[in-house]
Amino acid sequence: MYVLVINAGSSSLKYQLFDMATEEVFAKGLCDRIAIDGILTHQTKGKEKYIKSIAMPNHSKAIEAVLKILCDKEFGCIDDLSQIIACGHRIVHGGEWLTQSVLVNDRVIEDLEKCRSIAPLHTGPHLMGLRGCMENMPTTPQVLVIDTAYHQSMPAHAYMYPIPYALYEKYKIRRYGFHGTSHRYVATKAIEYLGKPAEDTKIITCHLGNGSSISAILGGKVIDTSMGFTPLEGVIMGSRSGDIDPAIVPFIMEKENIPASEMGEWLNKKCGLLGVSGVSSDLRDIDAAIKAGNERAKLAFDILCYDIKKYIGAYTAALNGLDAIVFTAGIGENNVSVRYDSLKDLEFFGIKIDKEKNENFRSMSDPVDISTADSKVRIYVIPTNEELVIARDTMAIVSK
Ligand code: ADP
Image (cartoon, rainbow, N blue to C red; front, side, top):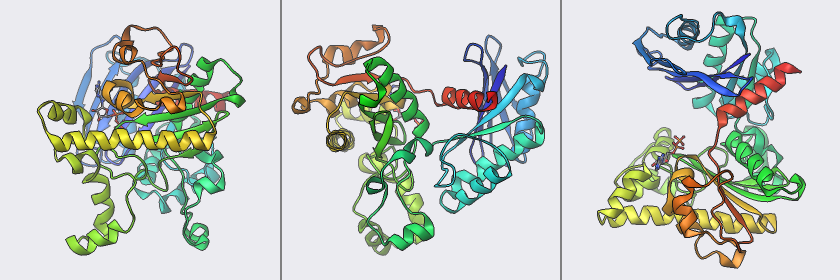
């Protein structure tokens, strides 16, 4: 019993084949340069890696290539496509139309089409990936798992922006939040570790990667999250600004002669750690530059830690207390200094990070708790696994 998880972007498509009996990844790969030329990188567990140029004029041809290699005698792992019981698709933005994982039918496709209006860059490729699967596997159920869904429990005072209400009604401008599948996965684990009833738990989850978001989770339900209408809001990110005074935007457009059509790209690609440091959007490069004495790299790092600290303070207030903080994703799981600097000097909140455990936790067993014994708040490092959540949701929906 296999579930194929699909993450479709505009020119690339990642996939993982899960064996649902063991929840292990049996095979995974990447279709790259779709609609340009096409490269397939594939690996089945325990077998040699396969990399080949294959013409991929569209997403449907990319899926065709994936299914062919999955059934290949030498590099594949299944005998025929009937062994794939369903496909699960990662959907970045479901708007107010798609608010939970759902089995695809005509109405669901119509709802996904509506999301183009607020998330055109992601929705178009998602639809192409979905249609590619439907064309190549017409009888296989397709499930959508939506990144914004977990945040739908936010109360209106957290998701509404202070703009004319009519514009919310007209364009659906509101906070949606992102990385929901990741926040859900790590919060569920943290609740398990805390060992008290889910409804009594107060957790802050910090998903810190190239894109970063922080969520306040009360009784297992999100009450606030740092990303907003788009994944640009919140803490400073690799090359995204995060929170800035909105008046800066028209000011820069005028001074630098940047048209509105290019401003989104500017805010997403030229700002953040990259913009401040002038070094890189990757924190490993920033770390190396700090060691070499680069002061602007240090400034970018300090802004990140300060942003995280401010969100933790705000969300502790929103939650009226705190049981656990979770760190996850590339930076959260790997960067010792970010965890330490963003949590030090928070004893007032009962948050005490253990320096030694924070640096050496790789030898610890599950759960990884890097708080001191007398810390009132547990501090967990939990590797995220969004694909597993997608596979599980898909399995649960098709088993009904
Ligand atoms: P994305 O948001 O694209 O999924 P990731 O979650 O992989 O990104 O996070 C990328 C960030 O995490 C980069 O800033 C990178 O420096 C950092 N990172 C990723 N892996 C490691 C690692 N093994 N050690 C230190 N930093 C890492």
